[in-house]
Length: 256
Image (cartoon, rainbow, N blue to C red; front, side, top):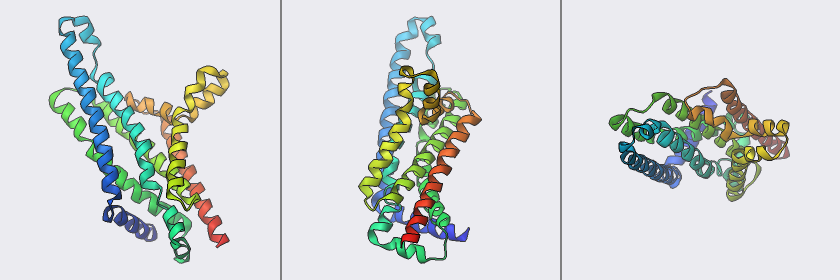
C-alpha cells in the first residue's frame, strides 16, 4: 500500500504544481456553470409563463427541467475534459524515458497503475465537489428532490472514474499525449453513442448495444434510481481498463 501511496503523492503533486489541474478544473466549472445558469434561467421563465395555468404548472418539474439536464450536460463535459488529465499519465513517462526508471523501482505494475489512477480520481473528486454549489443554490431558493441529486452525483463519479481508467489505458499505449487524449475521447464518445443505433438493428443486437452504452446506464442515476446492474457495469469498465493498462506495462517491461 505504501508503494501505491508513493506513486499517488508523486502524481498528485504534479497535477497541482503545474497548470494542468487548475486549467482543467476552471474550464469544467465554467462550462458546468454556464449550463446551470441557462437551465435555471429557462426554468424561471417557464415558471412565470405557467403561473396563469395551474394545469401546466403541475407538469413543471425542477428535477426534469434543471437537475436531469444539468447532470447529462456535466457527463458530456467530463468526456471532453478528463482526457486532458489522463493523456500524460503514462505517455509522458514513455516519452521522457522515465518509464524504464519506473520499472526499476521495487513496485509492481499494479502499484504504478493504481497510484496514478487514484491521484487522477482525487483531482476529479475536487472537480465534482466544487460543482456542489449548484445543488446548494437550488436547495437555498427552491425545494429539489434530494434523491436524483445524490444518485446523480454518484453516477457522475462512476462515469468519470470509467473515463479515467479508459484514459489511463490509452496513455499506456502511446508516447504521444495527443494520441492518447484523442483515443480516449474517441472511445468515450463511442461508449456514449453506441446505443443510438438500437432502433435500426435487430432486438438482440439493440439489447447488447444498450448494455454497452455508458449513457444508458447513467439514466437511472439521473432519475434517482440506483440499479446494481448499472453499478456493476461501471465497475467492470474500470477494472477492465485498469487490467489492460497493467498488461501493457507488463509487456513494456519485458520488452525493456
